[in-house]
Image (cartoon, rainbow, N blue to C red; front, side, top):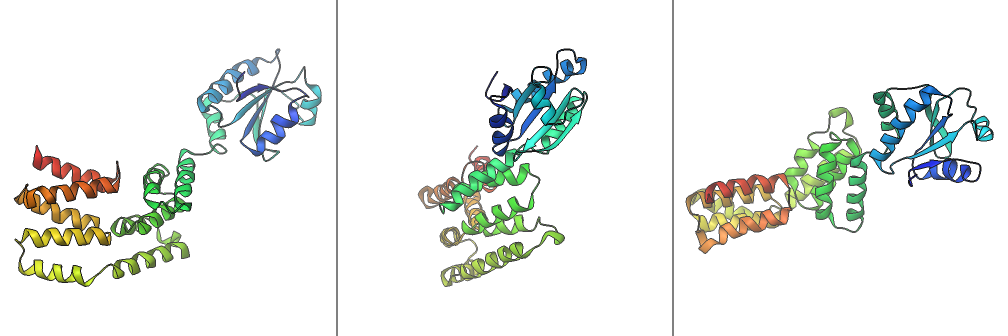
Amino acid sequence: MTDYIVNIDESNAAALLIEESHQRPVVVDFWADWCGPCKTLMPLLEKLANEHAGAFLLAKVNADEQPMITQQFGVRSLPTVMVMQGGQPVDGFVGAQSEQQVRELLEKYLPKPWDALLQQAQAFMAEGDFSSALSPLRQAFEDSRQRHDITLAYAHALVECNRLDDADSVLATVKMVDQDPAWEQLVAQAKLQREAARSPEIEALEQRLQTEPDNHDVRHQLAVQYTNAGYYREALEHLITILRQDLQHGDGSSKQTLLDIVASLGKGDPLAVEYQRKLYSLLY
């Protein structure tokens, strides 16, 4: 036995069938030695328990040896499998089932990988560390196929990190029917933050660059201002524009600024990866 596959008797039934089901799903398998289908089903349940390594508890009840427990659960034929949550049976089946059927049953009650990622990100966000929350939220956003609550959490972290273009892109994935007040609030927050970031310095440099499009120094200064305002894509695009024409501009300062922005975005960030590749194509 392991800490996720146990034999049940009267001494541990209350703790492992009732109390434990408040912590994780408990799959109770009622079986007997004389039951042929039981001998087919049990190895399958053990395989799935080992595969999920503790995400649920597999509790095996020998119906012949534990008649009181079997009767208390109203079991009338074998094999019978019940899923316990919150101290109560919530699902189950009678008779042998295919692996696919059992997997589909378990899937309804087992925590999803993206829930763990969301929980990790929420811990970072509770501490005000929104940048550390971005990576698990991005993974959860992709893996969950853009589940609504994860989408909003990801957009919130992007707004807090001043990643306004990315926040807009994430918010744009929300279908009109799901555009609830929380979504509207984030859209408005991103808009206000974008307007607030339009400093006089940025506007002056933009105007100057329009009249001096070949002035790499002005373009570099604008990239720095964009970075400070959270316009990372615009900043990176200006820097790569400089480097395409002068790889050593500013004694390498434009290249270093681009690398610094990429590093600040974090490993695996799609925007960082995109501009890393553009830089490497120029270097190599």
